[in-house]
Structure formats: structure tokens, C-alpha cells
Length: 137
View (cartoon, rainbow, N blue to C red):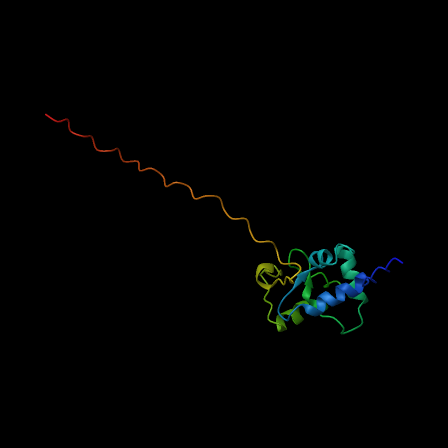
């Protein structure tokens, strides 16, 4: 008798589980969350999953757009930024967050090691002309 496939966690719940793991003072992008759930939702769909979460159930403020910007100001002007600043996140002058500094990558999202650089180049030859040898008498 064939085994029943394991029941898969619905995509919205997977989004909520990921957001629960993001530490204070760190952020993730909608696109990264989408990748982490095997693109079962688009980044916009991730936004819908966040909106559908029960009030206070997830740290929604820790999700930003791909440029490190706030995407919730249309509905809640200044709220997301205020909460993130209280968590220690600092914003650039243009209103974005430095994702290199404040971005969170889970163990599943850790980027592969960078490729090693090729062999070192030989040092450049000196531009000085070699000294002429004196002829023996």
C-alpha cells in the first residue's frame, strides 16, 4: 500500500513561521521570504500572508522591500519605521535600511561561499633598464 504524502504546511503559515524566527533589529525582504518558501507565493503574496496573520502574531515590521524600504506607509504612515528604530535599526538618509548590516538570512538562506579568486598575478617588471655589463679587456 503506497504511503500518503506528508501534509505540507500551507504557504501563509510557512511565511508566519519564518517571520517568527527573525531576531529583533534584523529585517528580511519579501523576495527572500518568497525564496524560502520555494516561491509558493510571490513577494506580493508574501505581503498578503503577512496581512492575513492574526494581530500581534508575527513581527510584520521586520519585512521590507528589496531596496530596504518601507512598503506599509500607505496604510500606516511611519509606524513600521518607528517600530524598527526602537529595535535598533537605523535608516539611511533616503529612508532605506542597509540590508548588508541589518539583513537577516536564516540557515536555509545563507548564500554559498564566494568563489576563490584566481592565482595571484606575477609582480610587474621594473621599468628601470638593467645596468650594462662592462666588456672585459
